[in-house]
Amino acid sequence: MEAFSARILAAGFPVIVDATFLKRSLRERFLAIATAREAPGLILSLAVDPQILRTRLAQRQADVSDANVAILEAQLARPNR
Image (tube, rainbow, N blue to C red):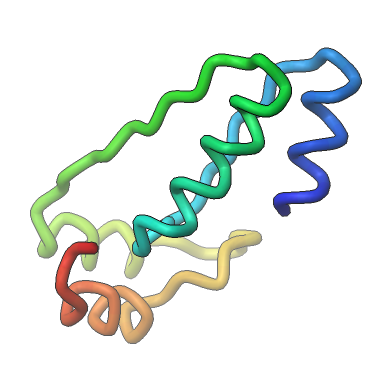
């Protein structure tokens, strides 16, 4: 995802990276990619009630995401970094 984002930015197109980015180091790497290409970088951190997340995951059907309730619970158990 990093290399692809860098190529798209180098070609002059905007990039939106939609990922969990639980670790600060991952967020910083993508900001560095943007900075190296003189592109503005912005991180949006969204907070949602865990029960709403569980409900939405349960309602998903055919979806390209590999997210499921087990993955969500593991992510919620980790401290924010």
